[in-house]
Image (cartoon, rainbow, N blue to C red):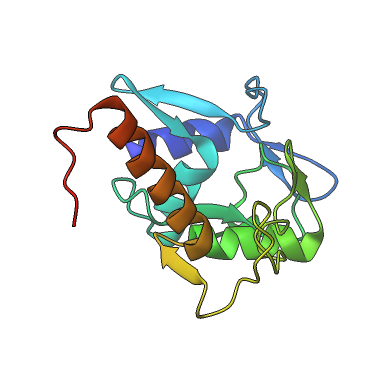
Length: 161
């Protein structure tokens, strides 16, 4: 399956001035090119990474990433692609200064204080869960509000100390 696709892509390869390999297929609005094999969608650059770099297509945690020199999302040149993680991808984006549709990727990483209660993000006040930071002070406030509302709704079933 993979060999046949790469043979097809090699026959229809368009080499740009920057050395990028393109397919001539219409890219999606995101800029990436997708193909369907056996009813399953695959990105062309992931297929290239699987063939040339040994990327496991079943592992969604490992990505096919474009090197910093290549800004062409439709490119499938194996010299322009490397295998990495989401964290590496975000760090590359930050280094380049690229932005997504919502602003700077490093915006939340650079925050030093909670946006709600303005307490500092330090070891005492910050809880990390699934790669995100949470303000303990805000969590306490939310918990108290929730308990207060529950007591107002049904005072008989609410435990008291």
